[in-house]
Length: 354
Ligand code: PMP
Image (cartoon, rainbow, N blue to C red; front, side, top):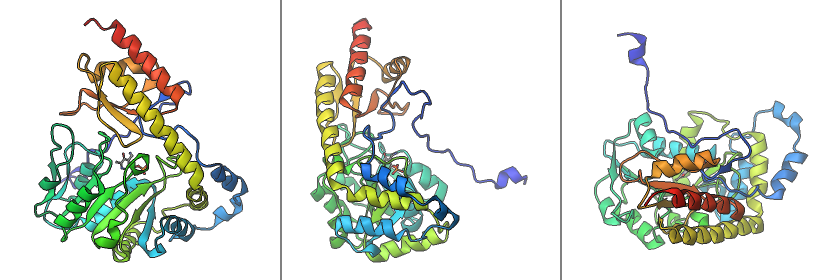
């Protein structure tokens, strides 16, 4: 057996492009079009660069405390990581450790199956219904754990809290992870469920609603005993995940509630306006509770629109995957960015022979 046979080989997750040019309209990775709170800039200006000589606090206590305070939790109920990708990966490694399959939707965040493969976790993808909704009853079977985003990605569709509760209640013997990357754009958080169910973990991020994808902060909130297990795995892997700059800037970021609310409101208003304009053009657009919309046009293939938009320096996301290849996922940007997109789509559809 050669050395190559001993190497772990995986098919990696493919993140959206990060094009270098600055004249582009970037609507492909669900970033926030508005900058982070001004308090983040102030914190970075005041930051003592000499302190970088020292390792950061491995527990990231200042950041953990700021998050706990914001949600009215105890520090022991919060875990932080390098974006929610890091937190979700840690959660899967920690909580999904059985022979039974972990359940998640067939159309969902495409990192879940990548992590499952990486960690060799058995899994089963549960089909969404024809309207692209999660069918809660399908999760009522023996499983090694459950993970789903709410709102779901890339569809944007939202499960009401009672439905999330019914999924959690149906699987008391495994951990249920609710990935709330987009919940601040109109969803109802499952956070109250961590008091009702010792097996529910709620994961959120600074990357979308808090305008700080570049800081890389994600966090899990759950019963203190689950957070302890997570920390045990983290400390078995890398103690210093959060750097000094991120800890301070992140704590300042989450304390600015008013700024955060106003950005979310602007994005939700732009989303509703964009959805209406796309529907006027003949697009089928799913109702979205996220900072993106999922849209298809009956007359044109998704791939063609995606390629055309690129020629206009507009980047959206398209997947060559079963069930969703006619769809585009379009991040909600500023009103001006959406106007540029809508004008380009009008030009394109006007030029397509019907
Ligand atoms: N969950 C979902 C559903 C997402 O779409 C994303 C963004 N790619 C993430 C988690 C991870 O985001 P981050 O690591 O930036 O927190």
